[in-house]
Length: 135
Ligand SMILES: CC(C)(COP(=O)(O)OP(=O)(O)OC[C@H]1O[C@@H](n2cnc3c(N)ncnc32)[C@H](O)[C@@H]1OP(=O)(O)O)[C@@H](O)C(=O)NCCC(=O)NCCS
Image 1 (cartoon, rainbow, N blue to C red):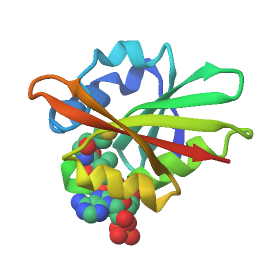
Image 2: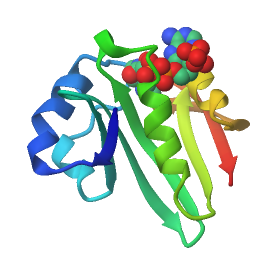
Image 3: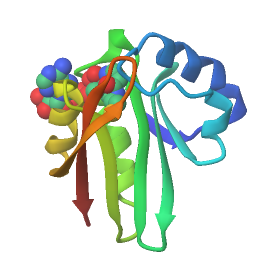
């Protein structure tokens, strides 16, 4: 599996994966290329991760999703590990409290829960769990 920066040619695959992943944030895929967007690929794109710098030594994971037929094969972990190999940083992310798969994924690479934001999400309303990773 290769992890590489996304290009405009990946946007259709990213949009298809996102539409099959209702738990993921549903933003406009072209906007991901403004940030740091990576894809994991074998013969086709299997998943994507979007992150951005929020301060000189801080980054935020904005979205991650893997094609439903390719889950539990280490795709998201490979994407996260590539992101976390950037220079020394602190990373933050928010995740729906009910999204136990994603919370377990983040914990598996070393993120820890630092706070909870009441009524953070809408459609449906739900608290966010805030997680942090320090390299
Ligand atoms: C969450 C998601 C990205 C995980 O992708 P994935 O490629 O299947 O994850 P990986 O195979 O890399 O799993 C790495 C670890 O995460 C945890 N994990 C991932 N999926 C899990 C699940 N369904 N149940 C329990 N733990 C899970 C496990 O610890 C796993 O390690 P293991 O397989 O050795 O036990 C994927 O389920 C997805 O796209 N979900 C919909 C979108 C979403 O929720 N995004 C997060 C928004 S904040």
